[in-house]
Amino acid sequence: MSEEHGTYTKLIRLLDERGAAYRIIEHAEQGATEAVSALRGNTLAQAAKCIVVMVKIGKKEKRYVLAVVPGDRRVDLGAVKGLLGGTYAGFATPEVAERLAGSVSGTILPFSFDPELELVVDPALLVHEEIFFNAARLDRSLALRTADYTAVAEPRTADIAG
Image 1 (cartoon, rainbow, N blue to C red):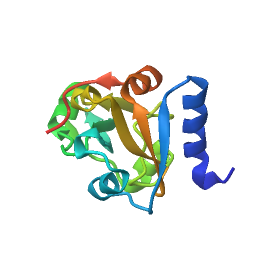
Image 2 (cartoon, rainbow, N blue to C red):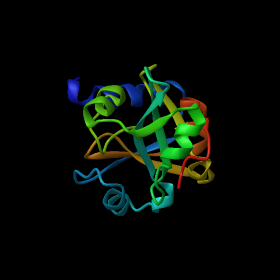
Image 3 (cartoon, rainbow, N blue to C red):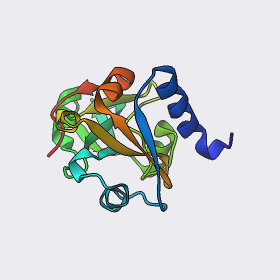
Image 4 (spheres, one colour):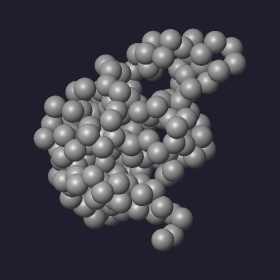
C-alpha cells in the first residue's frame, strides 16, 4: 500500500467492515466540486464539500472542524465559530488541513480519522439517498448511501452552510 493512498485504503476497509453500501467511481483527476460532480453525474447538492476550519477559542486555544456542506453551498464561518463558542474562524492552512485530513486538498473525505479534527455536517447534505465525494484521491470518488455514511462517520450535525 503506497502512503499516497493510505487514507483511501483506510476508508474502504472501514466501510467494508461496517457493511456500508457504496460504489467506486473512477474518473479523470479532478478536485474541484463542480467539475468532479459533472464527471460523476451527481448534482452539486449531493456532493460533500469538505473544508477544514480553524476556530480560535480565546487567545490560546485552537480547534479544527471538518465542515461538510452540500457542493452548491458555502461553509458559513460565523456559524462554525458560534457552534464552538469561538472568537474567530477561518480556513485552515493547506498544510494543516492536509495533515489533519490525511489527504491533499480537493480529496478531503467527509470522515475524520484524527481526534484533533471534529466532524460537523450540514443537515442539507443528508437529505439525499446517496452522497458523493472524492475518496482521498483525485482520480476516484465514492457514492455512499447516506444512512450508511451517518452510521459509520457519526457526524455532529449543525446548520453551517451559507
